[in-house]
Length: 479
Image 1 (cartoon, rainbow, N blue to C red):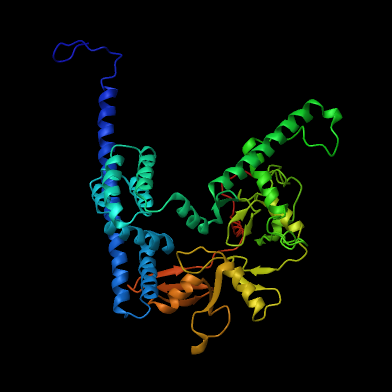
Image 2: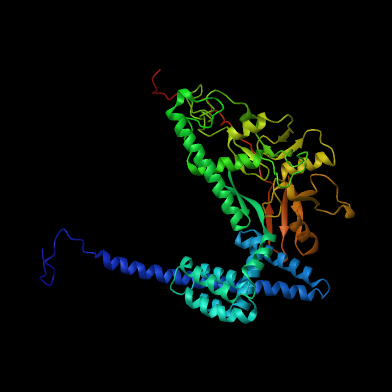
């Protein structure tokens, strides 16, 4: 075969050169990334404007209590933006403050960001490292930090940026560490598939010590397990080691940590009579009654039912009828854990729900005060501001129509709000009204409306299809 220029073409060769395609693709990806970074810089500028607007609104309210006024105005503006960003207003408010700081105190960094010479990760680490510097040192730091970040990955630039900030810092690491230790804390975060993450911030030496001790214990268990597998006949009941234990080192660390935290005594803080060690962990869960009714084959979830369908599934629809339990706040947990926790308690509170909508109808022994609060916690398993998800333990029971204005104390006029959004409702232009069945309508200062429905509890209902009407057979149908 020849081309129009009489040049021979190999019929087995690809007429498209992969190297040319890769070069073109690389150029397009580079241009796209630069465009994205520029748009992110534009959004940071817009968030900075939002923070300045909040400060302006606070100034119009008068000089009295200016700090509190700025905070409330920032909450209100952040809530307005959160409605269109579909984010928590807490996150938006924090981003507003950070963006305002970037624009005001890091002009060189903002300029490089706008020109896509550095990315958002570079910007974050420059801001974080520069937070410890005074105004004089920050200018010198920023120039060098930006130059060091251009053309490098954030990971490679981080060490240079942090060393530079340390050299220019007016306070020593020892002094800063003492302040940082004031912020030590433990927190938890939701993960999918019935998991949660426990986080701990403490001194670096303490964290390394904790991790090393768990690692030593985990390795000892693994060695004991291996020894037990080789000498199964000689293993005593009180000896360390299980020949059937095949947990990996990470799994052992996690299990040993959980075991120690749940059952160990805080010897460095406890009283002589073990007051702290006597405190037991408490977990609040909601479990559908059908989930508690364990049947044959539920342990694996794969055994076939009487009709031949897999266990836990509706034979008519192929839908899983067994539902997981839920922790307070709505996070699901697996049925095995739910049953174990249910078996260890001596009292349950019954929550009655609508068989179709799943709406909360009542709880046992309904009356005002404690039982009304239980009803509201069951219905409002999170803060009822439309961008918030804090659990019931953080809630205030807010009267939608104030009691002072004749609002009744009942489920039709109450809503669970975290303290942040309780204050937002009463001290800003945000308004809320009840639409019935626990549905709330929020109206923002700009006039936008948002509907928040109470989260459905763990329910499952099946509407059986109506039977087909009997029809006469066709004339030519055989009998």
